[in-house]
Length: 277
Image 1 (cartoon, one colour):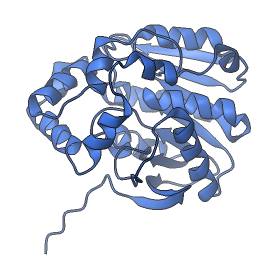
Image 2 (image 1 turned 90 degrees about the vertical axis):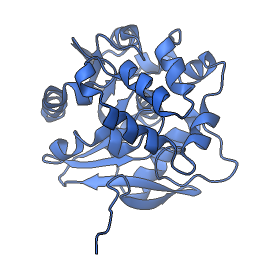
Image 3 (image 1 turned 45 degrees about the vertical axis):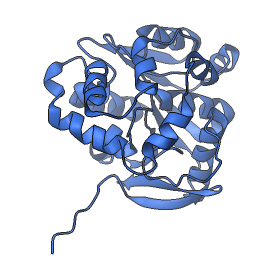
Image 4 (image 1 turned 90 degrees about the horizontal axis):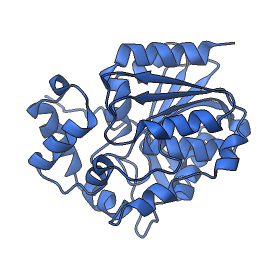
């Protein structure tokens, strides 16, 4: 009998008032927690599938579906906001009995990683922010289109072109897969409820105060694609200026998917950063 197994569905654990779907790979003294971005139909697996196996060679890797995304439970009447997502991260670590992590945040997930580190500095050892939100910027046309996505194959195909620098990465097959992901039961309903127009207010709501960012003493690796049409490079330059112990790596010929477009380099860069004494 052929049984179709969905790799996006992994483990489930109670986090506050709902169950979180999360991936748990590898083992070791250190734990790496990875927070995904906010595209339509996104899951932790879709975001980190090329990264988790490599990083799990040196540490335990945890990657949850954030509330409203993927296969995490969607309770009735839930609010989608930064405080709720930060609480979910804390509840997940508490439920798994993990005291401290190396934290990776991508795009929307970068703003959650940043806010979590500010709120619970003792629970983060090192921080990686990739194409991150969390500081002031004028919303791009690319991000407005991502958050305003209306389900169709054509719209998903256009979004794929916004996300990636190289057209070779973007096939009709990939667009069809991501379109089908975006119309799974509950996915588009929660996604459209998160970022209704006008959308600049949601960029602003994901900000952390500059003085709080400046107070962070964590070694921080900032990564950005030079040609990112979704989150402008300026956000990472701002983070570099604000975070005292930070470094910035910019990939040329790279859009918003550094972990996919420059996968081997991304994995090596993050691994080396986490392995520094």
